[in-house]
Each structure stands twice: as structure tokens, then as C-alpha cells.
Length: 271
Image 1 (cartoon, rainbow, N blue to C red):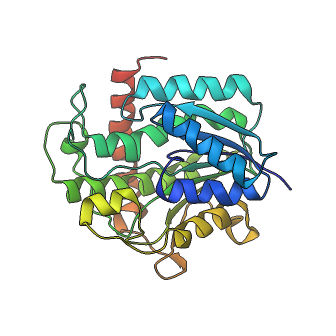
Image 2 (cartoon, rainbow, N blue to C red; image 1 turned 90 degrees about the horizontal axis):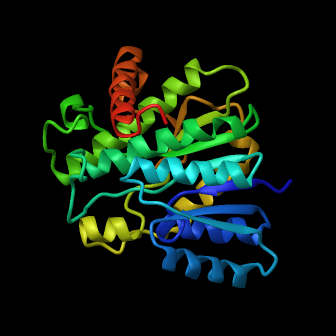
């Protein structure tokens, strides 16, 4: 059965490779990117893969929550349902690690933007839908002061904390939302894949991107990932696994979400 799939960070790396597979299979694709030019080129490339592919594009800077809200509104205006949301977009090294509003870009793009996008799009989803959140083998306890913008982290610290944070809220929403909610699945697509992010962070070509892309397609579509809401898949070992212990701690999950909700309310009050 063909699906309607929204994929963030679709113009590069794992996102682009995943999009190519999904396009070849004939799914309806809603592709996000930060650059209009790159989105245009991505759509052209995917049309070469499948000339009849249905592809819509959405430009948004995920470090700006107002862009996230605008993108979600556009998706809701143009589509009645979404079967799968893949929150793939991520950042590790950046020349400007602090946003104009005073928050760490890694937390904003890797953690808070996908949280806002997921919540905004819940009305288009049901119990058969899936939200696939990209986590990482790199997970570290979240410094809530850093999340609030009161403390500066190194690139590695910010990335690892942001990836534990998305895993934490994935687990908590899976637990607390009602029976009609989509499945929330956190996944490490594999360490040191050859994405632009890995090359910039480590100066390494990395492993074949198809390792991660094929797993994301499986997570989006396969029965193997059905009924696994609130769980973590580690593609480094190719199986379900336990994340960092903080992701299993309800009080820490709730403390994180409380701070995120405060940040969202500050940046997009009652929108």
C-alpha cells in the first residue's frame, strides 16, 4: 500500500537516500529542506528516479520555530492525512551554534523542532501512523540549563544531549498519548554514515548511506516496526535495544518536556 510520508532534511545525506528509495516505490512524498534551490534539485532528481512520483516540497529553517509552525500549517492545508513522519533533519557542527533567540541550534533543530512539528501534525495521523525520530548511539544526560540557553556546550556535548532528548520525548509521548496516536519510534540509523554532517564533524567519508536509508524505509513501512511505539532501534547492532537510562526515567522525561514547552511558549506563544 502506498503511503503519504513527510521527511525532514530530505535534500542531503540519509534523507536524500531515503527519499530516492521511497520515490522508486511510488509513495507520496512531502519533503522538507532549508534551501529552496536544493529542494528544487532534489525534486528534479527524484523525478528521474520515478517520473510519476508525487512530490511536494516545504522550505523551513528548523532553528526558527515560526518556520516550523508555518510549514506544519502548509502541510495541514494541503493534506488530510499523513502516514509517516520521519524527523531526520539534524545538525552537529555549525558556524553559529546559538540562535538569534539565544538557544543552542543543536537542541532547536535536533530536539525541539521535531517535537513541535510532530505535535502540530498529530491531527493528520492515527494509530496506524508512525513518527520515526532519528536518535544516535551518542546519547548523554541533558543539561536543562543548556537547553534553556543558560550554558554553552561543545559540539559533541550538544549533539549527544539533543539525541538523548529526542529519544526521551519519543518515549514519553508514546506513553501518555491516547490509543489513536501514532507510534513514536526512536532509531539510531547507524554510526558514522557518510553524511555531510559526519564529514564536517569528523573529517571522515563514513560508511555507505544506504545502511541508514534502508533501515529508515523499513522503520517507516515494515511490519517489523509495527506495535513498537516507545522503543529504540539501534542499527549498529541491527536490533531493538535499550537507550540511555535517562530515556527510561519518567521524571527526567517530564522535566525535559516541561522545559521544552516553556521554550515553545516563549518563542511561539499560544500559536
